Length: 219
Image (cartoon, rainbow, N blue to C red):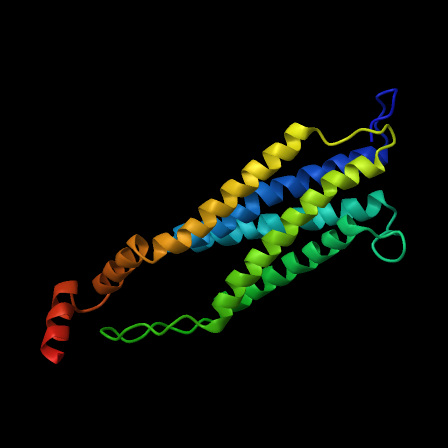
C-alpha cells in the first residue's frame, strides 16, 4: 500500500494492478458475456461477442491471479497464512479456466439442426450446465472482489481502508447486474420466445400461418 512518502514499491503496484484487473473483469467482461448470451441469442453476432468477452475475462483473470500470487510471494495460497480472499481467488481462477473450456466443448460438439419442417430438439444438458456454471463463476468472482476490499484494509501498511463510497458503489452495481441478468429469464419466456418462433418459422418451408393451419387440421 502507499507509504507515508507516497512511494509505490513493487508490492503496491502489483496490488493496485491486481485490484484493477479483477474489478474490470467482474463488473464489465463477465457480466457482459452473460448478458449477451441472455439477451442477444436471436442475433447471429451474439456468440462472437460472448466468446470475445469470455476470452478477455479469462486472460485478465489469469494476469490478475499471477499478480496476486506474486504480491504475496506465492506463500499464502494454502496453509496457515491463507485467508478467505486467497481461497476465493484460487477457486475463481480455476472456475474461469474450466468454464472457458466447457464453453468451447459445448460449442464445438453441438449437433446439427433438424430437417426443415421438424421442430428443433431441446437443448443438450451441457448447455444448461455451462449457463449454471457461468452463474457460479460470476458469483465467486464477486465474492472475491468483496473479500478483497476487506483484504486491503487488513494488509495496509498505513492503516488505509476501503472507502465507504466504494463499498456502496460495489453493491449498487452488483444489484443492477443481477437484476438485468435474471430479468432476461422472464423476458425470454414471452417476447424473446415469440421472436425465436418467428425466426424458426422463416427458416423452414412453412410460414407461421401454415403451421397453425396444419395444427388445426391435425386436431
